[in-house]
Length: 60
Image (cartoon, rainbow, N blue to C red; front, side, top):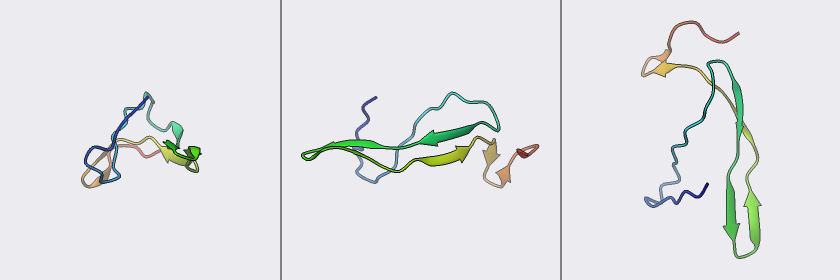
């Protein structure tokens, strides 16, 4: 997948196929003049949220 940060603000939106309470790992790969650079992985717990926080039952 190739996504360009056209606004150059460092923010991206990525769609992830997951179920509530799934744990996902995400990282970024960037091709530079020196080769491929990969960021450390970050983990996220999939939870339904609104502006006030988690909606419904939280994950165990």
